[in-house]
Structures are given as structure tokens and as C-alpha cells.
Length: 340
Image (cartoon, rainbow, N blue to C red; front, side):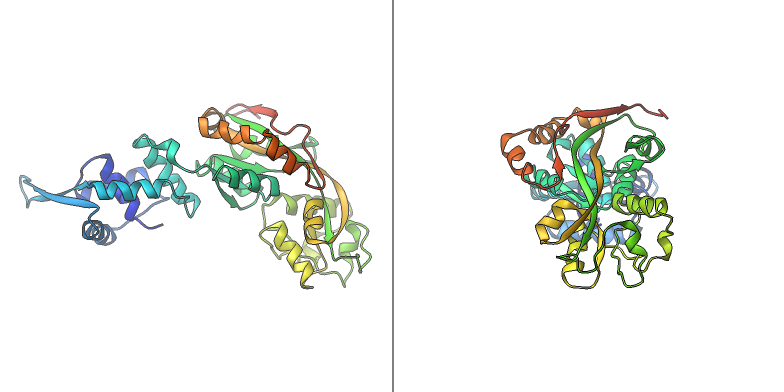
């Protein structure tokens, strides 16, 4: 994360000298943002050279005069552009969100959605000019707990409770009130090459020596459900060739099959149809959006959720094979702080 605009935002909050800025970073933004004095003063010199800040000297008893930094109109324009640009990382988003809140600029920030890969969610995010970070269901929930995202997309099933997402939210996002809003139910299964040349009929076929698997990342819902089905079939996932592989998205799994670098991978019926692949169905899963209550009530989140029910989005999403939108937009569960 470049310190240029975060430092500019600190100066916009209040005129300050170098040591005050360093102390603010250390006490308010660590460990997401760290800066040493050498980097601090190099960055301040850049801000001054670009005309983003001005400097005045202030007498200081017991020592040399301090250099006090204040933002210029040109700096405010640069800061406005930065706040309207999606963050490059969860840490940068967290820092940006805290700075925006202190400057009363929260509504200007692009909505950030982290977690699992989903075609419908990506379409909604593009329409709302939101920023998506496909990192898997568990990582999305951990980012939600850390305040690094406003919404987490998740499809994690608890086999003991025969329920999706609720127990994972209770344990991973334990210190916030969370609403689970359904996006869709999706048909999941195994993506295989067109025509199914390996004659794959189910989970047990993954144990065949000739079958090359391409997997999803650790913590992704697809990897979790595949491991569960393998164990139910009496197979140890870690013994399978390709189990340690990781394709970032369902589309990447499909491309591996198209190029012949793999024979099988977890995926959705919608992905199989999109890439012209064959599909071995396993079941249906519920994909939910985990949203902190405080975020749920904000206008930009309400606008995003409203977009799920528009005629245009409904028409587009009804064309997705294997998607059931019967409960889309409904609040599935309200999970209270500390509730287990």
C-alpha cells in the first residue's frame, strides 16, 4: 500500500508535524499500515513537491521550529480521487474506511465484497460499481470480522447441522451482529471435459490413478464440500493427485479442463454450460451474503441489495443454469454478537 494518499488523509483530518503523523499511524492503523521515519519524510517531500501539501514553521520551546503540514486544494482533489478508487488490498480498504469515517466521507467509498466466487454476485457488483475480492468463503468471513470488507459471500455447509453458513459466521465473525441474506441456491458438482471422455460418474472416480484433479484454494467453499464428499466416500483427499493444486476461480478450473492440463475439478453447472464442458451433478448449495447489521442499514448496501430484485437483474439471473432464486434477497438468519 502506497503511503502517499493515506498520509494526505491524515493531514486532511488536522494539520500536523511529522512525529504526530508517525504516532497516528502506529497507534490507529497498525498492523494494516506501518511506516518508518525515513519513509514518512520521503513521502511528505513527495506530497510537497506535487503541491498536495503546504508547510509552515511553528516555534517549539526547547528545540528547533517544527514543520507543520496542511492540505492544499490540489491535495483535496487527489484525495477525493483516491477515496473513490477501489482499494488494492483488504488492508488498504480497512485503512481507507477508517480515514473516510474520520473525515465523514464513508458514502464515497466503493462497496467492497469479499469471499467466494459467484457469477451472479460479480454481475451485481459490476452494476453497483462495487469492488470484489475473490478469496474463498472462509477468508471472506475473516476479512468481515477484521473490518476489511462490507459483505462476504459464503457457501459453507455444516454437515452436523445440515445448514449453510450460520455456524461458520458464529465462530469466525463472533463479535458482530450479522445478517445472512440469500443470493441464490446453486447446483454444484464436477466439471469434466466435453463429452466426459474419462467416463466419470461420481466422486469415487477421483481415486483412479489416471484422473488429474484441479482443485480450488484452501478455505474455499468448493474445496470444503469436495473434501466432505470424498471422506463420505471413504477416500482421503490428501492422497489424490492434484489435491494441493489451487485454481483461483471456477472459470480457471474450466480453463484447465479446456487446455487439457486437468481432467476434473469442482464447479457449478453454470460454469460447465458457459465453457461447453460436461457436468456431473452432486447437489444444491445455498450461497449467502454475510453483512454486519451496521453495514446492512447503510444506504449504499441497501441500494446494492435492492439491485438484486430489479427486473433487469432477475431476467439476467434467470438465464443462469442451475440457479434457484426462490429465496434471493431474503434474510435467512440474524446472528447476534456472541451467539453460538
